[in-house]
Image 1: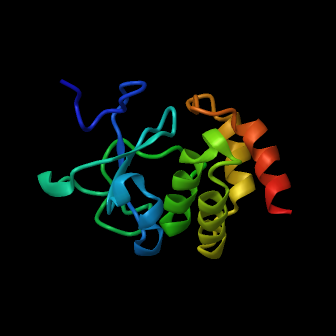
Image 2: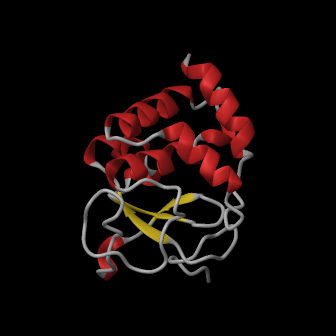
Length: 144
């Protein structure tokens, strides 16, 4: 049986992220809390019924719990929106509306999306499920 607190792709412990209300439609299963893998950056819906603590450095809940998101992820709602957007980068063309909305939300919340993507691409502890440098270029072209 798969551990719901671990990434189904790379078996790392998930960082629990509280999803901002106005970004929930873009979260897996429209979940209020998602699990973000600090290694591959995949997002999965998690059951918050077990009382586990969401990471308040992203979207403001309770004190942070281990593990933590990569250092390149900005705090607050901007970081949560950025992580959700990264989850859609596997198909930029198909997911364009969601990516645009999430990038706009992240930027409106004070996140520098392109700087964060550059830092994530350079972070040796991150092995994202997509080529972040390539997707960054596509994203930049799409948003021009």
